Image (cartoon, rainbow over all chains, first blue to last red; front, side):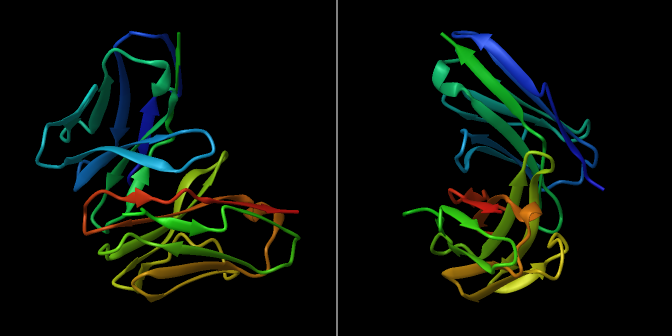
Length: 111
Length: 112
């Protein structure tokens, strides 16, 4: 059974710091991995999608990497801003089109 | 595109009442997913459809829950009768095959 874990559960950093969020999964047989952002009381916003054949994807200040063999993905946020404060969720897509979600990392960036 | 549309945004009902949640997926998406989010259990997949056909309903908690997709642009999730433990945020999402899932804003359900 696929399990997805995110570390740390919460993170508080000053504005301007570069930071890394971690996601690990137990079964490397995935089709892709997706990173989401969720603001309090809101839905999920897709940030990046990495196909299983890819190593990384970039969008603006965000960079996501994928190491399928070791069951790990990282989300790198450069020059963090208070507006980046949210919960970040990773999810892996398994062979039945299902997304299996991690428990999330709650990020706070203070001025 | 307007994105995934869900209604109502908030629903407060009494235990025992029937609740119907609605979802309109993004046009052209052939997959539709219903999720439930709680503090205790996080995000759980309840059921998903492909081309209006239910593919996997193993996440539906019990017979009180049912979902339908009568056409490509509309789906419902019904709870009958509702119970306090059903209180959660229910999300609908849509996608094309193995591509990004796009989520709606969710319906916050409170059962008293």
